[in-house]
Amino acid sequence: MRQSYLRILRIFEIARVLARYRLDEVLYFLPPLKPYQALLKTNPFRWLAPHPQHTFGTRLRMALEDLGPTFIKFGQMLSTRRDLLPDEITLELARLQDAVQPFAPDKARDMVAASLHRPIEDIFAHFEPEAAAAASIAQVHFGVLRDGRPVAVKIRRPGLRRVIDQDLGILAWLADLAERYSQEGRRLRAKAVVGEYAKTILGELDLLREAANASQLRRNFANEPDLLYVPEIYWDYCTPEVLVMERIEGIQIGQRETLRAAGINFDQLSRRAAEIFFRQVFRDSFFHADMHPGNIFVDPRNGRFIAVDFGIMGSLDAGSQHYLAENMVAFFNRDYRRVAEAHIEAGWVPGDTNIQDFETAIRAIAEPVFEKPLNEISVAQLLLRLFQTTRQFQMQTQPQLLLLQKTLVNVEGIARDFNPSLNIWEVATPLLRDWLSRQRGPQAWWLELQKHVPQWGLVMPELPELLHGILLKTHRGEMPLTLRNDSLEGIRSEIRKGFSRLAIIGGTISILVSAAIILALEHRLNSTVMDLPIWIWLIITPLLGWLLGSWMRRTYVPGR
Image: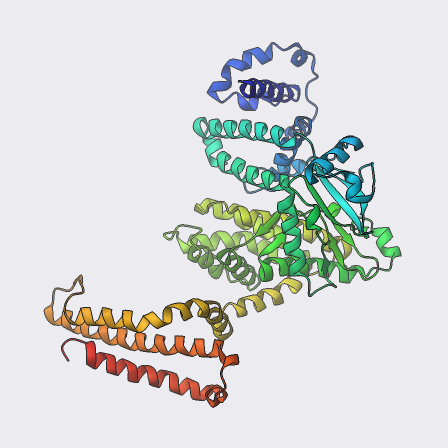
């Protein structure tokens, strides 16, 4: 009962803020909210409020800032959805700031002690009472552990989870109404957008999850200390409400004059920014998705990047990686037919899409871009135009690609801020081609074999018996077959051919699997067989497969 009462109060608070900025009318197309229209229009504050002097986008941004953390973060997420909203709105939402007043020092100390279940003096030799930074989700204090290690302590705002859960419930309700009663709400896929946002912000609230993200990113770049440094996580002092990590010393990326005074090579910095991003996406399939200037520092000693704030991370599955790499290389080669084919092969547009029309639409967005000098081409903007165009061909929104596109906007901004003439394509293309080459050909096959060998080793002893049983049942006529040929002779011919192929394939697979297992265990073998040249294996393998297949045909194939 109390929760329902609080939700009703919050709904009225939201309506009041929207009315203040003359945004309330956007909700009155929803039938359940119609009765409140007359009530709110009688509000004297609405009568006395001056006629709005700002654009719709500006008023929306100001209203979201007044509504607090949930709505500020929601607006920031919407600012990346230029595939759904007009540019004048997304550009304004991109200006949203979530800087807020820090909560009291005593409250911070109490929260750390309660979360870690011990007095703060038992953990820290020194704990800064004043927050070094404060945002809508958490604030950061500096301190020193009892063993002398300097740390940064991130503390989640008290009571925030209850507020966010309440606001997410209201947003989900509004999204459901929008899709139920509005064609525009269905076009914008309001419920999916709110669901995507809920997953993101709830992930940000869990500081243990952020710690795990930081640990993974640190491990990914452990062998490239000159590119990116990630602070160490001190797991003994981490909970869902508190995160303790190594304190870093660096110059914020936006302090250009300080960086110049430190002797930082700006051209090298811009190239490293792009290289770090593409390595994260294609090598690791795990990338920092909140790379705005406030989260990126530069080490003045060696010019490497230092990242903080790992609450929002992105990842791509193998299909998305392949799609992105294929499209970027095809765009660079102006092979628009290949771009269209890649979308259809990935299943992201319907298989019956007219490929000629699709190719023409892609050419229309790409040709004007590629008429510019390469150093003026924005990969992020090109991807955005592509996403906007593919929606006309019923491509479903891919949240992971939109998150990547938003991150790429930040990376390009950082890179070109330090070197306006940087050619992003020049940095990206070698990495993309190298990644694609490793996904195809002998190297990729060998990696796949190594990945599956342990599993094959478990089932291999059973394979001959299973194959023998299948072929024996078929030979005795105990294996049901579905025949689709009206000609009896054609049926007999097809059966013989099918068994012949099956025998040869089965024999070859058995030999290849056996060879893969032998190679995987070569460190345990002491045999001259392992020293044979590769060309001998290329002759032996198909020959053994043919011999084994011939024996299986004579033994099992009917009509022989």
